[in-house]
Image 1 (cartoon, rainbow, N blue to C red):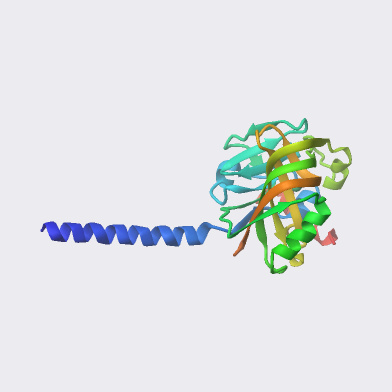
Image 2 (image 1 turned 90 degrees about the vertical axis):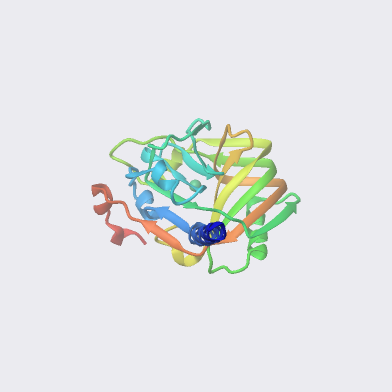
Amino acid sequence: MKKLNSYKQFYLIFLSSLLCIEASAQTSNNVFQYSVLPALQSGNFEGDFSINELSKHGNFGLGTLNHVDGELVAVDGIFYRISEKGEVNVLPGNSRTPYAVVTFFEPDTSRKIAGSFSYTELHSLLDTLIPGSNSAFAIRIEGTFSHMKTRSIPPQQKPYKKLEEVLKSQPIFEFEKIKGTMVGYRFPPYVKGVNQPGYHFHFITEDRKSGGHVLDLKIADINAEYARQNNLQISFPQNKDFMEIDFSELD
Ligand SMILES: [Zn+2]
């Protein structure tokens, strides 16, 4: 009887470990995005997707908040907002986003990069390090930057302008000799119309007090981790404003 119990126990542990392996294989390194980039670009600044809901699809990523009230960055499972003043707050679960891209990030490669590289040079360097330009990659860069230039977005009111117009008055922040984390993606050219091809990074300082959408930088000493993404899942907004966008006018 005792033998049977321990056998059963072993079987249950074996079964649950198999289920865990399967669960992590299903959820890691899959890109999930709420809405499509052209919707945000056209001025669709109110979504019906909460941070609580978003956190079920990833613990790492970027985006914005309803009314484009700042930049969103998710790192280590915490969802932060960088306000138009460059200040950071941890987002409550009921905050909503009109556009966000997240992943359960599990890096498969890690590289140290030291030297005075510009943002453009970093892109070229990552292009040589990361193989497969037709795959999507999630990238986390941690370290010291001799210069970092970011922006955030001031909250908007209806009737919403196009994002391009809003960005003409974007607040810009510059940091010298700053430690922090860059969270981002490299998407292949064919995602145009859905997401942004190429590199897109958001930055948050090591003390989690400031950051923003990365515009320019100068590297001092960093560690880049990245992982090839397996799938892209898109959740379409169900709100009336989204339904009324004329996507045929977008190139
Ligand atoms: Zn951004």
